[in-house]
Image 1 (cartoon, one colour):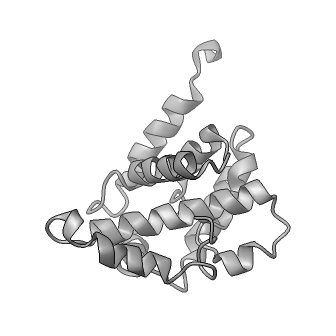
Image 2 (cartoon, one colour):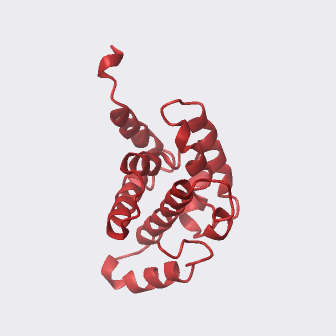
Length: 171
């Protein structure tokens, strides 16, 4: 029975379930995975692809209420964002197949200025910050009305203004 177990299918299905928290914004994890994968490829960051996709799909696994979800999508930088990150990391830590991603999930809303001083591996620091960047990119895009191309410059300006402190300069 377990010989046909597919971890990627399980993660995809869990991502589907996470989408139902805060029902107004489905496919968030999938979009974050796409953005992160594209950025990783473009910048040749060498972040492990499986970890990137799995972490992105499940990064909001600690969101337990629509209220928390709404705060996360309404605020570019929410002071209480760490709560759901820690809850998600606790869930990951209990799962042998995903426990190595717990530090990444715990810090996927941590500023780069904080991350670069932590004891995390360089790969985990970069992946956590890449997920943070991709998550915030998705929030900014989802919050636009009308044609995305008409607001791309303002989105770019917002993200660039956070370079160095919130986001790694490389990202």
